[in-house]
Image 1: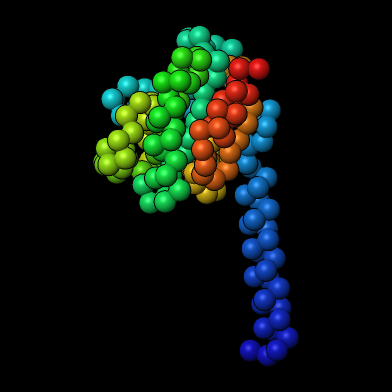
Image 2 (image 1 turned 120 degrees about the horizontal axis):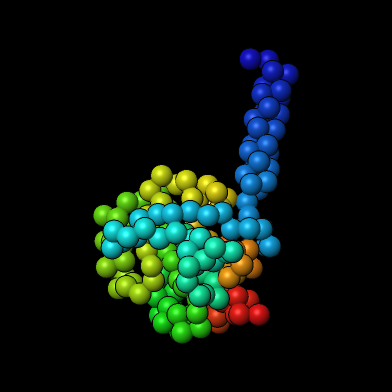
Length: 176
């Protein structure tokens, strides 16, 4: 390969990488976007449908949903999940549902992780195909979406929720 061909190859690879990065950010949800609807089986075998708890046709009276994507291999998720679990009752008392979504994992792995971490209060669903995560533009974990009662994205935390204050502030946006 000549020097010119090598330089051309490097430029093509760089352009492809930038295009890939740009394309993934185009499809990510942003604030005030409508949250994509989904229905997934929960850890108890029931179907959890987002439309039942937020949006125009909701069946339950809620102030919103905290939707957190996680995976067993994610170190930051292992730190964050017990924190979310510890605040689940407090959020429930405020009319906010907490839903954990095991991203691209089945219940065998999900349940093993949650048992190990003693996480037992939130609703847990499996997005084993990654289809729901794709709708939400999940590119890395953890990521947490705060969805208002009207079904719009009110707040997003990319990366690990570091403390209770950060989670409470995000949930507080659902009560305004």
